[in-house]
Image 1 (tube, one colour):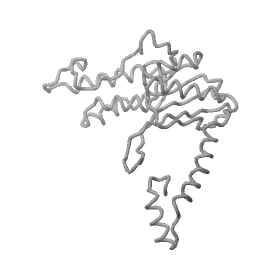
Image 2 (cartoon, rainbow, N blue to C red):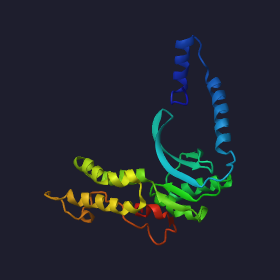
Image 3 (spheres, rainbow, N blue to C red):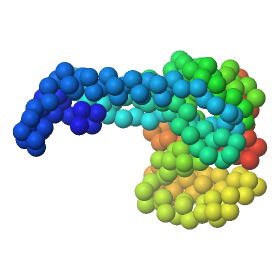
Image 4 (cartoon, helix red, strand yellow):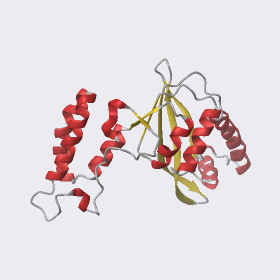
Length: 234
C-alpha cells in the first residue's frame, strides 16, 4: 500500500480495520528498506552478454511526496539480447529528458557492461541525440515509429485523422522500407489538403500555432548514424 502512494497513517488505519492490528511506522520503514535494497541491487546489477538492439525512452509518472503529487520523469532502457529476448536494462527516476540526464543514464549502463549495441530506437529527444554518439558511436539510430505517428497525428485535426490513417495504412502494414518515403508524402499531402476551403493557410510552415510534421535530417552536427531502413523518420 505504501509503494502505491498510501500514506503511513492510512496504512495504519487500513491494517487496523482489516486485521485489528496497527502496523507501526517503524515496521513500514523496515519493510521499505528491504524493498529499496533489492531495487538498488537490481538497478546496479551487471549487464551480461551483448544487446544489439536498445530502446530508450522517458516517461512521466505521478509521485506522492509529502502529501503532494508531483510529476517525475523516468528514463528507461530496454535491450534485446542475441537470443532475441527483451530485458529491462535500467531505470532512472527523478531525471529530466535533457542532455545531462541522458548522459548520466547511458554512462551508468555502459559501466554496468552494456555492449554490442548496433541499433538504438527512441523518440527525437535532442538531449538524447546529442549524447548518444559519445557512448555508442558505432550504433545506428532509428526514430520510434510510435512516437513518430503521435507527432504526425498531433498535427492533424481529429476530423481528418481517420482519412490520414487510411492513406498511410498500406505502408505501415507491409513494413517495406521502400514504401516509407511514399508514406511520408501521403501524410504531408493529407496535412496540406486539410487547409483547403478553410481560412487557415495551406502552407503548414506559416502556421506558427500548429505543430509541424517532422522533416528529414536532424542537423549536420548531431553525429547520429541513421538506420537506412527508417531514413524518413528523421
